Image 1 (cartoon, rainbow, N blue to C red):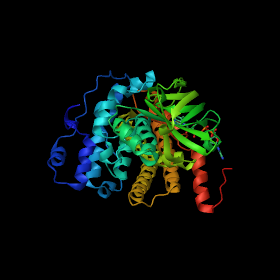
Image 2: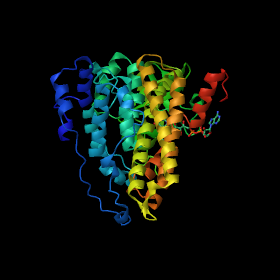
Image 3: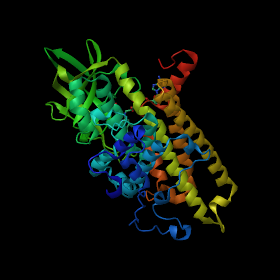
Image 4: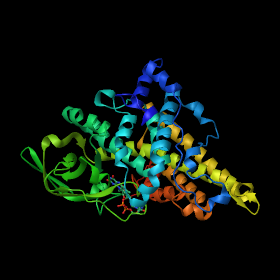
Length: 447
Ligand SMILES: Cc1cc2nc3c(=O)[nH]c(=O)nc-3n(C[C@H](O)[C@H](O)[C@H](O)COP(=O)(O)OP(=O)(O)OC[C@H]3O[C@@H](n4cnc5c(N)ncnc54)[C@H](O)[C@@H]3O)c2cc1C
């Protein structure tokens, strides 16, 4: 991967060093190293672009909207994390995403590079293999990954927020020592099994059971829509026991366990989605998360992941907005660029305003989290707003690219399709509406 790698250490881990020792030689060396230059694309030009003068792979010339100069609000370290991940996404991920989206595959070959970057569980303390970053830096990582693709951000969110987090927060010391370094280094992949065929928004109704027999547990049930299930080494499985909901670490080769892939998705195609089938799966009591008791345990993980999604929505919106801006400035209709007409300018002005408000929301969310003041209802408002905003932006941008907007040679259509999943998973838009409503009124309207 060349210039982004420091031998033997996660790149963003070196940033965490920078939080405590800004004059570290390694950190300063990184700052003066040139960012990765966009690689020349090998994709053939689309015939319609001959007149549009629109470069294939607009992502290479990406410029992030920063209308209110919010970059001033981030520390140097936070910006360095953002720019490092941004360069990696441009250089290493985006050139191949179209093929992965079309083939419904995830680029597993990039997992070691993601691990080297340090994006798996980046807020996890260094003693467990994490990068020890703050939450704003984690948010910026999610933003940049989702500028690439929601599937990429989903992979990283699940690994960090839904697998490493529950092990860190609810696991035994032995579980932490065994799994966290493996997961941080990408040597093990994990998934999070909460949703079932009949229980998504209401996970408390789950049918998967855990029955205690001596110092073992017998698990039975079925999970559905589980990101990374088929490629995982370990599944965090939530099941109902006589004592309430409990979490278990189920390894991929456990007899009775399987994770068949779910096919035929039109959304999040560059992401693996799976069923988890548990038929008399026996696990030791030592595989139970000892502190993961009750529904509040999986919901606590979801708060972590939803936090990242609130930032991720911004990344998808940036990609679409920038592509539409570049496109409309170069696409000539009736002898003028599309961007010279009033209707496209209104669309751009509306989108820039909504994105800017989303940026402020995410930034404040991150600062609240880093100061320990964040509540799940803050996260609900930000996830709800920023994903819906991104979906609206993607839809408008897709339209502004005309017929090219439905081509996977451009980004807008892919983001639009992906965001249909993002607005549904990790709490649907409606459920987050009701969470905010409950916060405001004190009355739960979802039951
Ligand atoms: C690509 C993808 C990846 C996913 N990855 C994972 C994963 O890794 N792990 C995991 O556990 N799950 C995962 N999910 C599942 C996801 O979290 C659920 O799909 C989501 O929680 C919604 O549940 P549901 O699909 O059962 O919809 P339902 O709960 O059946 O909802 C259907 C509709 O009813 C609305 N609704 C539901 N309840 C109410 C109410 N009380 N009041 C008003 N309206 C309501 C919803 O907003 C929605 O519009 C994934 C889903 C997708 C699409």
